[in-house]
Length: 212
Image 1: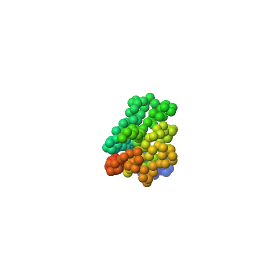
Image 2: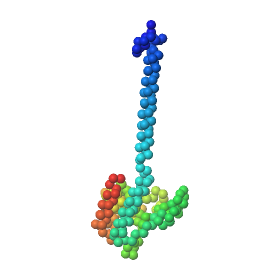
Image 3: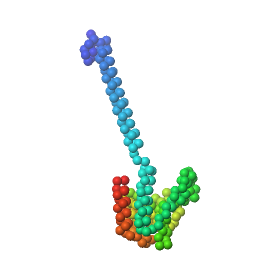
Image 4: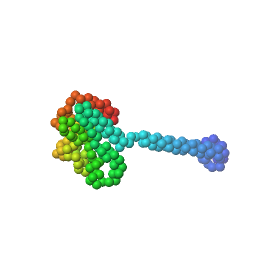
């Protein structure tokens, strides 16, 4: 007489399961399958949540840029410069939305307007502020969207450790700012700057950017 391979009870088939054991086995498989499916679902949900929590790189970049601009604006004010906001949104409020999708030369020039004009001792300067974690700046960083139209601009680079400066004409000549060089803002001939004051604002930059 055929016996159930688990409980030894009567069964119709050799080496098979009785109805009771067969039902238990299938219920157990169903429970395991449901458990696995639930684990997979939970894992995918956690991954999606983690993905959502990741910083938007564009927004993060904008925030860093704004902090760098504020540091430089206040630095020049502390050095007795008059500082005038000059960028696209300050000079032509609302034009950013109007320029969406427009790629002609005028639109490019407007987008590339320097951040500030600083004035002291009857001299004015265009100032474009950049933040770079790498501490490096080269011409290709400036001309991603075509030739830069403000030939007399000075680029002030804020890093985690230093505040440096280079002119557009120097970038065009093949020079660049590198992490270990000495192109500090306090060394520029254009400015009669207070190096101790610049160091103080470097400390502000370190404080704001040390964890980003």
